[in-house]
Amino acid sequence: MKYPIFLYNKDVIVWSTILGEDGEEDIKLYEGRCVFNEESKQVFNADKQLITISGSVVIGGDISPNKLISGYVVIDNNRKRILSTTRPKTPKGTVFSTELDLE
Image 1 (cartoon, rainbow, N blue to C red):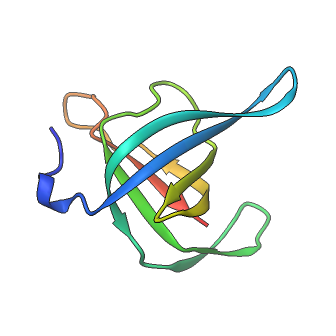
Image 2 (cartoon, rainbow, N blue to C red):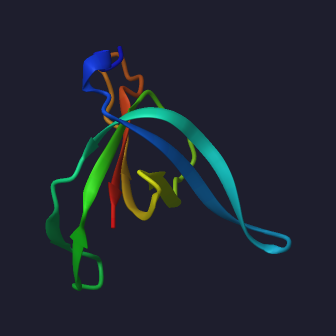
């Protein structure tokens, strides 16, 4: 199941940063349309520091099955770091979407 096409409002590129032999390497995970929400909020991280989430990106389906997503996204020619990832599931147990909170 996907989101209706009229909800997709931005083009996005999701990059994953991994540690390789020559240092950090960027791998493109996804390029296409997404639902972008610019609502900002403040939350506490694990170290009890106050951080600001500047928005979120929702992409239909699982863009990186069984792997941790860390890196950044490029949206409207702005680079934003990924703070957290959520993958809500359907009642059948499949991943409905990938949700990325951005700094």
